[in-house]
Image (cartoon, rainbow, N blue to C red; front, side, top):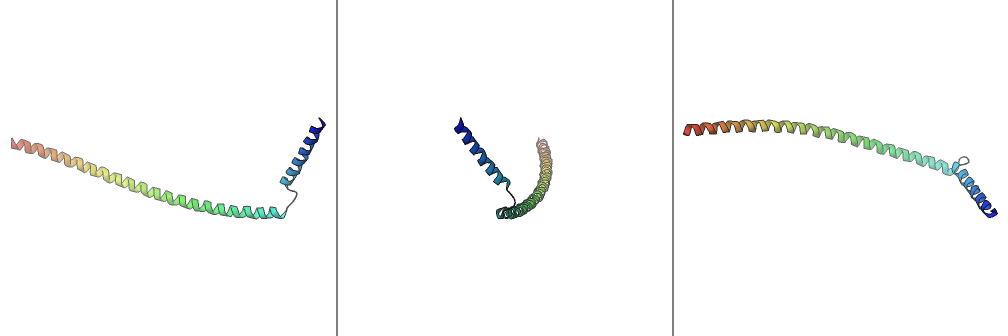
Length: 103
């Protein structure tokens, strides 16, 4: 029983020491460097975000442009389709008239 208590006690001391270091007792030189590093990283990330937002906007404009072209092409296609139908009807009428005239 006694051996386990001692081991347990030592483990607690280690954990306290580690958590004390993690909490940090005031500023050390490393802390300041880390803050500067984090600030630099934030600047880089902000720049990347700005660039991505710009790319997104460019893509949005491109997409809208394509959407417009698609609608335009669709209208032209439908118009052509109506012309083909109209011409087909004319041809059919002409054919049937020709057949009737030949008889």
